[in-house]
Length: 210
Image 1 (cartoon, helix red, strand yellow):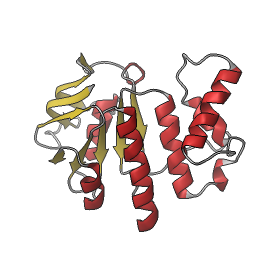
Image 2: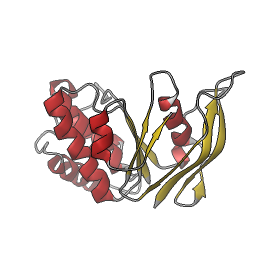
Image 3: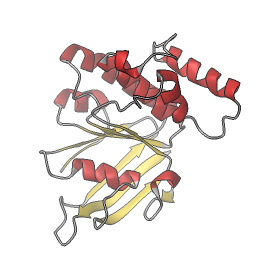
Image 4: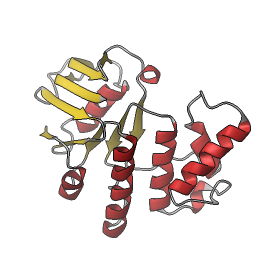
């Protein structure tokens, strides 16, 4: 498995590219890193990889995942997961229902889906949290739940947009290790956007500065 960006840049409508073309190869279980000043286009780059570019933005270069060209494919066909700075959980759903929302459609039947969700919660140290209101979770618990929801969809790559920025220093290191360990165990390529030198160092993968 590999995520390869070849001479990639992005242009807003009627404007020059936000950043110089970049090339990056991320292999299975690796966490590549993109750094750079605010407003340079780091999150826009992730949008380009995930298939979420806003109307009028133009992608230059090529993005391939496991040998398949992602250019022109809709987001739902790319099998690329996302984790954001804020762990967005649906307020009207329980923690378990939030995770079930991310389940691969190939998992059929209520019992099978419940079993898969319960196993993911236990793996994240959230055993017994299935029926909890997301509002009762701490920042770290929400981050763990958001990661497991992303992984239950069985993505072929994972994008991380400043996912630890809202956590305090002690919790940040703990959750960062949890997330990175799961990416390595799952053996999928991941691309992290961060301003934090500690995040970049812990990722241990190739680094590109925009």
